Image (cartoon, rainbow, N blue to C red):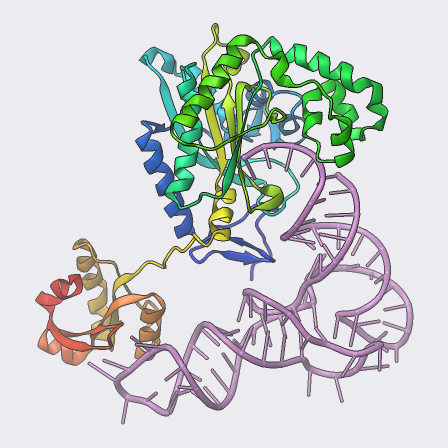
Length: 428
RNA sequence: GUGGUCGUAGCUCAGUUGGUUAGAGCGCCAGGUUGUGGCCCUGGAGGUCGGGGGUUCAAGACCCCUCGAUCACCCCA
């Protein structure tokens, strides 16, 4: 047994999954199945994959995501080496926008639809559904300010969940307004809250100056009651944003997607404007946020673009999705079947397995055999464990006659098959 | 980062008020079946009781620290 363990908040994805404590990590085949579903839906939306480095310049994230956000102020794995500040990416939107600008993808004309699947890193305290290395997938539609792009982003996420059979989630939707309406609203909020600021928690008091909109997110009932008469963001939003918001809702209505208009939904990343949304599992509990996203027209210029590049996107958690599937009893990935397991008796037969397995594999069959020189019984047990459809048994007698005993593992029936008919028999 | 709960074989867990060589089920390996898996029977391997320190004649049990897991807060995907 090794004295080394995976780092706290990280995990291995094993063929049969991992059970440590009460928490379980899905088997690798479940991850693959979900990834395939994601790729298929993304393709249906005309999106192509982008893969960006895990390491990014720290400043990209602090500028992009926002200096005052929790992610930047206390959750980054950042380090310095030589003259460069590196960070393990905590999210994907800023890196994707960085790549878009770096490679002048706007010059290709049209709208870029880019999707990704990959690991992200945040130095939070690990919890169920919350890891330090976690996996996000998402879609970024860059270059379009049309409300259809916003709606399409949401619908794409929904379609991925539906493709996997998941439908017990709630979409919460809000508009954050444009670059001007937010400061005006913030000011109004501060004026409203300041008189009773001393009744708020320390966390909320600190936010009053840094990010007052986040106070509305509080789960404390006491604070919620104090905030009852608070000014509503909707009243401070510019007319264009309002119209945009209504358009987005109309498109969702048009395709029958249910959502909840939530004027208190505020996203934790600074780059959002106008559309913000979150998809919450109805069953998962405290880490039940499946996906979140919105419009981030302000990000491009924040990262140095000369003019605004309109963009929308969503990011979703792989672990959350896998958990939700498990909770809904939809995770059932069957163990893959082996076509044949070669059982060898004696040295001559052992020598026969190696080239035979290879030529059968060349013909498209999935084949394995014992590598430990074990007893026949042990080989059969192994074949059974590996869920093989057929056992191919060969000993000195078979080699002499150029035949093999082919046994159907499910029916326990067995027949003699000549070597030149072996592949055909196994392909049945 | 804060608080609660929990760490005993690969896995799920027992282990009486501290008292000899720490147990079970499942899994694994082997035999029963000298060339036939699953079921059954028999046997075997596998544990510095998370780690360190302390109390005691004696600690898996008690105390302290630490690490890890887990749940909640917080935050988010």
